[in-house]
Image (cartoon, rainbow, N blue to C red; front, side):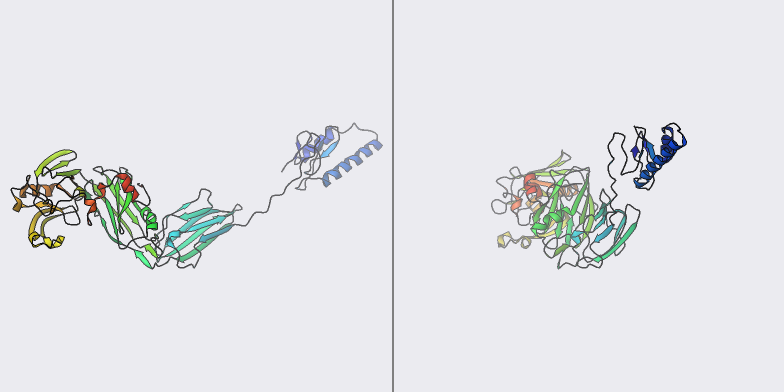
Length: 456
């Protein structure tokens, strides 16, 4: 490195310095004076050699008073009469350290903790993490290139291999490998079933519903919710709500918009759900929201109005549950299933009074509660439709109206039984309500969520 001295001459330019020294030397004298000058120059040269630069080179330059001075790092002048500062040597390079966690050979690893790779005094060049089948583990590299972490959770009872390579400032490369196995939990959180079915088109009231084989701990519900992602096109936010110990439903703030595409990813494998409980499955499914078909039932008038995308299609006279003995549930309900023919008995709904006994084959039955509330054809009640409520709780109509209704509605369509003196207070008090999710306000819904609003 060159150091500036004298009148801008650098210590590394010895030829220029010598030329400057020669041009500024005194005029030639007799031989004795010349000998004195040569001795003085030799002394200066010796001084320059003793105070040379750190690279071992020396140079002289003309000083402001006609004398010569050294351009060394420890001597001479900076041209303003002050001595230059002493040089500082660079600290020795620190050795690079490369590590992966979990460590090689580890067993019983918590899958929720994932994989971390760190390079100290180096930059990661590549990281490859795979399971036993060779499937890559997703991960993200830090902005400074010094660390890498897997995203999501690892699977239970699985073996993973990590290979990482890093390089330091000198170009030296180091590689590390780690092979480890995740734990086998004492208890597994499995999937019992989900709703709606994959690839189906459903109504605007259909929630996403996941039913587990057992209940996750309440303190771990947030982790479970975050592992279940709902992606919608067009985008809409929503939230999970625990409708029971083993059921979580996801819905938007309001009814779905017709045409919405929904994709659900249940990435529960390896998610901690209790002290000894971990999720043991991954599932993906999708569905589409169809036309908005909403049926509003007014049991003070004993009629049902069916609309499609806001347009009234038909108003149907009906007969519902006998009051006060068997009133029909009120509230916003969702079509659960459709049966063209169904055998109904009083025993299936625990009616023990002999006067309430029935065993009937019913046509065009549309189920709206888990406890057994249907809309169906009830020709035995002909003459009561639109006038009298005389059923055991179901909503009956004529054969022709029931056939039309059956063909018009689909799973997920909304049936809104308005509360009145002829209904029970609300289906939310039913021990087996089906999907009564829309009877809760948005703020009430969020109270039942551990992770809050989400959406992709």
